[in-house]
Length: 76
Image (cartoon, rainbow, N blue to C red; front, side):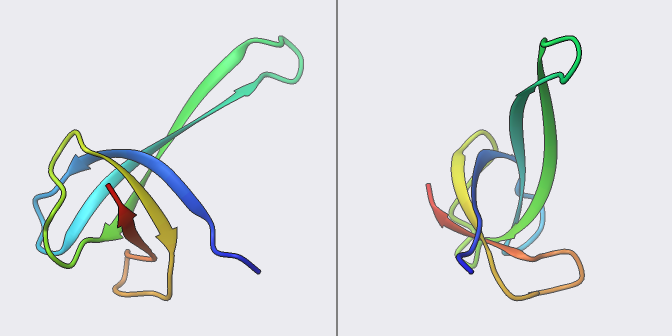
């Protein structure tokens, strides 16, 4: 099974080797047919501390790195 790849914006880079990425998804409400925006935050591994707040990044699933990190940054 292929690994999921998501695109989002870095919202925090305060921790060492970790960035918090906010990923937004859009979908239509099943009854009202209105477009809804929902976002979710993921903690991703950034070994060189390359990315800063506001950067658009792509993250990929990986084996657990820590208690909260199951994603790694693959591109900027």
